[in-house]
Image 1 (cartoon, chains in turn yellow, cyan):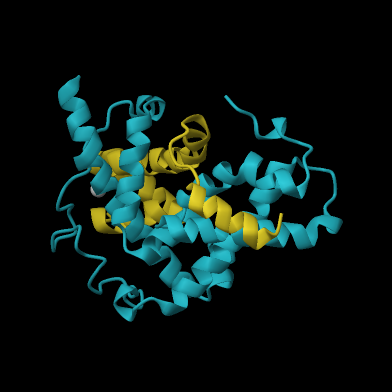
Image 2 (image 1 turned 60 degrees about the horizontal axis):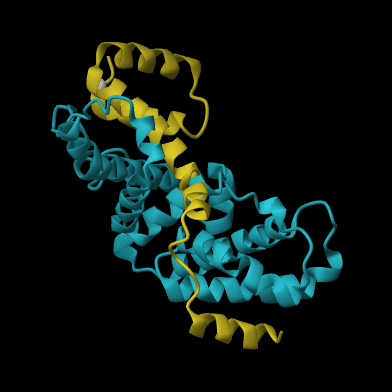
Length: 80
Length: 199
Ligand SMILES: [Zn+2]
């Protein structure tokens, strides 16, 4: 049986590419039996989704803007 | 919601007005400070100007400019990657070196067991949540934050990241792991614990 430490590493790797079949099986068994690792897996999936939405958030709120100094500087540099 | 494709036809002289703030925010989400983000916007517009004749009319202007900015961000990461101090580097990746074990007890059990976050997706409707997420990203060491950005915001594969930054595959996964572990812990303590109390 995997330890939680091992399972957590495999879970992170599984976010990026498919694991070998045996590893995947061992991991499924561990996650099925372990609520902490099962929570961790859900958190990783959530984190992925949340990160992707950072840009949408940005275009909706109009908080950060180029300062007028920066804008002038860029305008001069670009020469238009 | 504003669609990027609404702005489709303007000349170089309008880029800054029409897309400047957007590009600035896009950069600021990925790099740590405003002046770097400003520089990246400038580099992007200069590069766009010299590539204007090669532009095919396939994508909207904003999409095109954003694509250039993405490349500029990767270039910036590559440069700063070389300049950053060695202490930021992860252990060479062998499983049990320091930096990998800070989250676990010696017997392999969690030091702080990940809690249930209930239905976390509701948080995505709250803009304060994203401020907390950004804040947690800023607490990561620069390299971890950059890897997380390339992975989750630029959607690059581990192989692409290795190639762009000249990092070994082991270092990439180790650092992504550490970034995720830190982010999860940060979100749990800064958002979800409070969130649960509020329910
Ligand atoms: Zn476990």
